[in-house]
Length: 345
Ligand SMILES: [Zn+2]
Ligand SMILES: [Zn+2]
Image (cartoon, rainbow, N blue to C red; front, side, top):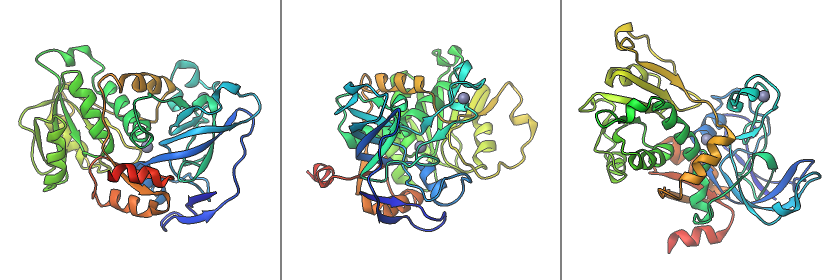
């Protein structure tokens, strides 16, 4: 099979012809139809995340169909369409797993990081960590739901843990970095009646226009301040200097969620801007419950994903476009020429 392989962090992925993987006990073999490209993939490829297995096939927003089942897997999964997310394995025994926090499992393994992922024609996955996908979504449109969507959803839930923040007088959300996750979370937030304020790179009028098209009532650059104090903010951009900036934009009692897996150092800031019961927290990974909840919710809203398609062997170009902020929405790799032609129609 063809696969895009990371041999050494810091250099481009290499197109390789590899033997077909086999489904082991508890696993399924999946023919990959689409795999979205996540900012986390960039952090892995660029060497900012330190624990990848090498060589590695990246990719953790996988949509495909089950073509073979390993020992111990129910026959009924054969032929079904599934989604494979970032969370690829948890131990089920540690104190985090036993308290409904499997996203923090001490022994977790992640797809496209410690387990080969979806930048390939085939992949294997633990069937317990595969999701059935809502029927209305074509493969390429469903792929970004699996991380951009899931992490965005978890971040939004964490940002509004207090129901008081969803009252008529509160409910203002700042979104810092308007990429794939933001474009999905904005739709979920609007659906809940939350007002959106989008903060992009300074001068990025295209991203600001994109944010407004998804319901942001204000969009500006990181050099500007949102016009009203925010009740919550989510930072998707990997820039630590946004933490004090977002804290300064938060109202008292506001929650700031850092949604990315990697961020540059956060500069020192005065206690003043945290005072007033403001909260700063990160969101790490996902639980399977997040996945089930979000994948049931998405078609009800309905969340629409904007995708840019690339053939599998153009993964490096997709990563470069993401790195340089050259696309609105999500980049998606597809293994079928069909996926590309559907887009061009
Ligand atoms: Zn565990
Ligand atoms: Zn991701």
